Every structure is written in structure tokens, then in C-alpha cells.
Image (cartoon, rainbow, N blue to C red):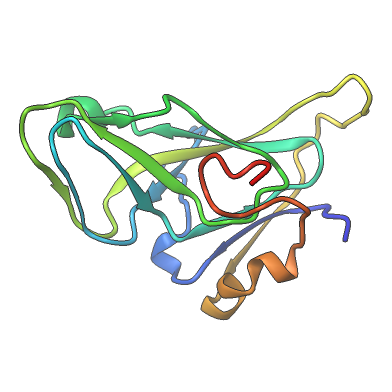
Amino acid sequence: MTLTNIVICVADSIQLPQKHTPGAVCRDLVINEDITVEPGKIILAPTGVKIACPAGRHTKIYARSGLPIKSGLMLANGVGVIDNDYRGEYFLQLYNFTDSVVTHTTWTRLGQIEIVPYFLPEQAHSLIMPAIETIIDPDVFQRFEELYPTSRWAWGFHSTGK
């Protein structure tokens, strides 16, 4: 299958990454379960989002700008880079750098995604951004890896080559 559009799939409409202003570069990510992060610990917070990008595009995950000052949390890996052939659910690696337990409830906006081009010397890609197709369907979310096949694993962080 050759992808021409960027496909963003979620099981529930509240999980759909949203731009909240016309000039927003990124789309906010919510967490889809309550979380508790102990001091000095890292957790994986699920977002309920899966994305399939065509060749020449990949996704970056950032913390929302107020996350450290408001919550005492940061992304443990700084910026998450998700290759275009990854089909698993997106997670936020959240690190609590405070001395207190930090909790957040389901649907809290903690991260944000940016879909960006990349260029490899052996490939020629257009600068034009492909259309984004959104799918809100729990069945498609469960079958996403089957519907948008790839040769790589979809087991989250450090899944390349497992």
C-alpha cells in the first residue's frame, strides 16, 4: 500500500489531536487514562492516537509549553521522533522532576505533535504537505496495523529491530 495522505486514527473523538488557534504549529495530545507519576520516575502515558505518514514525513512529539512549570513534568526523551513506518499507539514518556507525586486525569492535554517533512539523499520528496485524513473509529483503531501495514514493530519506544 502506498500512502498519499497522512492518516490520524483515534477510537474516540476527544482523542483527536487538535489545533486550538489558527496559527498553531502543533496539535495537542490528550492522555486517555488517569496517570500518577511518582517523584523521580518515568511513566508511559497513552494518547489513543495512531498515525500513518507517507514517505517523506514523520511525527515529532513535544511537551506542551506549560507542562514543566504547571505540573513538574517533562518529556523524558526531550522530543519524541516517530518514524513514518511506525503504526503503534503514541505514548508520552513523562518524567516527574519534583519531590511530589503528580497526577492528571483522562483527557488532559500534556503533549503536542508536529508532522514534518524529512529528506534523504537517495529520495526526492515534495515540500507540499499531504492531506490529513482523520478517522474516529474504535474498530479501525484496533485494526490500524493491519489496515496500514509496515514491516516494523509497533510496540512503542525502542521498537526498532525488536
